[in-house]
Length: 105
Image 1 (spheres, helix red, strand yellow):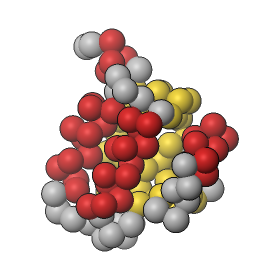
Image 2 (tube, helix red, strand yellow):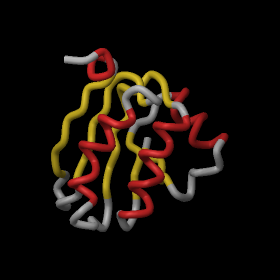
Image 3 (cartoon, one colour):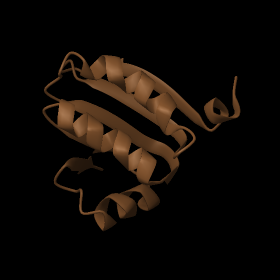
Image 4 (spheres, helix red, strand yellow):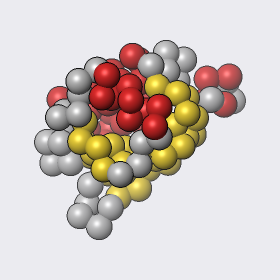
């Protein structure tokens, strides 16, 4: 396991409506964004109407992490950010992406 993979944990499931749910824990940044992209890309290939990112366990989010989420928003009907930490919520709000990345507390 590489150092990048040590910084993020990713689990994928499906919600009751059939939408993919990606649970991330750790840091979503320059080092780990490629790992997240590799996980998300096949889910987006089916062009889901909605995709959910549970960011409860994300402790740090930089512009590379935001890029993962925005790419998903462009390929899916909508993106829901579930349970973001205060830090993650602030980054999304500071970038003005609340309408693109729908926050669900």
